Image (cartoon, rainbow, N blue to C red):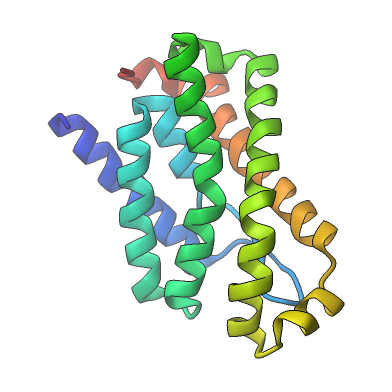
Length: 184
């Protein structure tokens, strides 16, 4: 990574950590958040590509582990939930030979979001039922499935994806941060 990428990654990771500490958003009764933490992760991808987005997300998750009451569980859930969007954009970029400006087109972005929401649901529904909800609430997997319907987990994750992607897209393409991008 170049110096400016490392600097940007550090700033974006610090922003994500600060947003986790302030925690603007909404928390479901079973502990899932719709928040702004991963907006900087998606923005990092739109500005600098997959390597920088991965660095920002990993550093942010490590910081969240130490500064947030949800510790490693919240950091792991946030990281696992956001990675499908970044992975879909990386795969689209590589397989379709896309450039940064291509993600500025809403139809491309919406296609990526739709696929990412499906993957995110496939990852996060089992993660929540078998891991996160039992640890967070003390419920068994059966109780989690009884009290938290799968469609609620999927719905919150879809809303979270939309919040992250739309805000990052607005910052990068509407507020013209893309003029600072270096994308490979």
